[in-house]
Length: 94
Image (cartoon, rainbow, N blue to C red; front, side, top):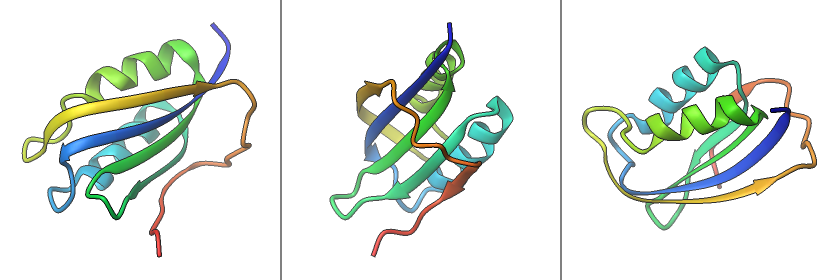
């Protein structure tokens, strides 16, 4: 389908349960680039780029998460101008 980018906000029990590390491993398995970070409001932000069809598949697993997570809501904004990430990483917001 071609390039796509997505800014995703994941809400629920997603901090302190290994969600970022799980997301990091999965994104790399899918060959996606971008980052995952905890936000101060208790949610997790995922910014991801790659093939749109792969991102759509990745979104399905984000809604489930690791076994200790409990996802209550996912908000998504698609974008089409690359931010040119080199890889996928865990970011630490200060």
